[in-house]
Length: 413
Image 1 (cartoon, rainbow, N blue to C red):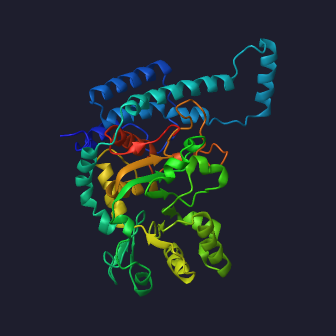
Image 2: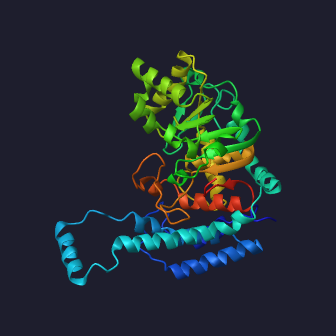
Image 3: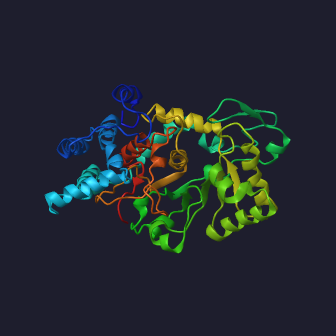
């Protein structure tokens, strides 16, 4: 039995029972570079022998969690403390190493450790169709082709839809049922030669991966990302399916309720994503009036004769996917949209390339990385969402990469 077919959930649960489950919460632990280097070295040897397991990868990633907190330190301090440091610096001379120097040296060391983590996999990597086929046999229990999105076929009139993250359910009445497509959209029932799933991490900055991303037969992006001229060489321009969360739809387009906002929304899609075919929305994340506000997008696109089709996430499939990956070592209240779309892509893409997924604030060269490529801030709020477990999701992607199931791109192209 291969590593992929084994179920490591019990082992992961025991090993990680005492670990903090919230994403990238401050652990107040420090790991010496020497000890971490030894762990990475043992991990590399395990790869060579093909004995590495998900818990081992999780442990290595757990040991590097602290780097985000080391880099994203509090910069504002009280004036009295600053004056005291300045006075001390004058007395002791300018040759003393500053905290910025120490931070930079630590970042370089951490970058080297991360590079070692990937180096052995990168050097001999190739797609492994047998491993992909093995995983697809397991994924078949999710019925992705039929159930990834809501349709009239899987959601009959007067049936009920359970909310994904809150109690309660919504009855499917005429007005809602009318907005659902008759059958599953083509992207979830077809087969693509190759696909690009493109996250928004700052790891893409300076990557030069734009052309490689755009060369894929099917390209997936998240939350209406900016594809401006200054980003194109790194992130590309092509997009076939894009997601949009409730917050983005509300703050940028006012749920596209007024005529002005309807036009603004449709024009934004047409101008930024001329090749777009589908927009994936989340109307049933939790109970409330947002269900109608989000499903309303389907009517807006039809009214404006848009070629873009609105499709709605299926809470049942999202829940089943969460259980599927939890049984394989990925724990969390909900999966990220990235992991949900990768679950789809594993089912429909013969060769899957994953870009812009990175749970650290330094890259493999020790350079600081923005949370998103389109802004200059160092916010780690997204890395610390209590509902998601990004470290375990990433360690699973790393394991799938090691087995040749997908290509995890973390360097320049």
